[in-house]
Length: 74
Image (cartoon, rainbow, N blue to C red; front, side, top):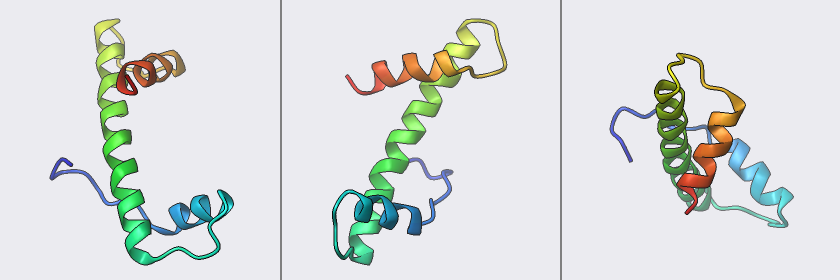
């Protein structure tokens, strides 16, 4: 995890885990889930920004994010 990244709020991750079927979620589980998602989202963001830059744009488009997702999840 990069040092300059902001920490994500935990409550949205509790809601996601509960929606997925968890009856109760510990604070540690929420922190771990948030940390893993933060890492993934940071890599996805970097890749999408690189794709926009490579195309000569300053704006990241939906297509950049979709292509970045394919590359990051491999």
